[in-house]
Amino acid sequence: MRSLVALLLSALCALAQAQGFPNKPLRLIVPFPPGGVTDISSRVVAQKLSTELGQPVVVENRAGASGVIGAEAGAKAAADGYTLTMGNISTLAINAVTFAKLPYDPVASFAPVSMVAIQPLVIAVHPSVPAQTLAELVALAKAQPGKLNFGTAGSSIYLAVEFFNTAAGIKMNHVPYKGSSPAITDLIGGQLQVLFDPFSSLYPQVRSGKARGLAVTTLKRSAQAPTLPTVAELGYPGFDVSSWQGIVVPAGTPRDVLDRLNREVVKVLGSQDVRDQFAVHSAEASPSTPEQFGAYIRQEITRWKKVATDAGVKPE
Image (cartoon, rainbow, N blue to C red; front, side, top):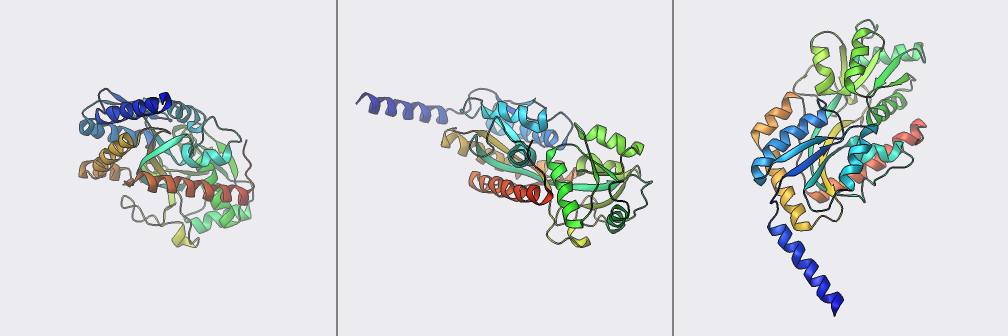
């Protein structure tokens, strides 16, 4: 009897909490430094979400270890809906492939709220590289195996390049960076020959002539750079790599709270103002149900496990 009463009281408390949600400020953990594509998306969404929820949504950058530090903080927060995490392709998919041990589980530790945005990567080279097209870059890499250096700012982009290396049958030397800024600096300075990076970070350098853009990695061209072809249309059908983001909360968050968050996030992403702000960075708002986002995360983990296996990349 006591256990039944306790169960009923717990259910009533959860219901009362959900009906009163939110009655205090929320925080949105961003597992990366300010200025990157995940941070930009987060700040756009947080501003609008504050209005819809009637409470401040404070962005908190918790960078480090390919997003592991921030993702762990989000996973271990109270499951009450007041701590959101802006996950992305690294924290919710590729880290599960490249790390031998994670302090969180991308699937079990979180309850998905909604997808937020999808953005292409740009493939660019230093102007001194004698390759005007992607085909010429592949030919150069085959003629000079191991001579070209490619930079990546994170495990997700590293696997994206290995995905391309495998598809093209080439080998380039990997140079890891802690963020896009130092990688772009070295590309512009000529210390780096090839760089794959999110559109919002790299394309301004292409537009200014400091780097030469060769392709984008999504299946369709970017509206912000319509002359850049896709990798798929250049002879690699099915090649599709996106830099994506989505909001998650700790596993165990009450369903009513989760549904409220989903409704408001979807509403925010449907705003023309938000879509316009995303479009400047060639990002596309991609609202979803929690179930759709959860299925997408699991699909991405499976896909990148195969990429890692094919490329001989082992978790560390």
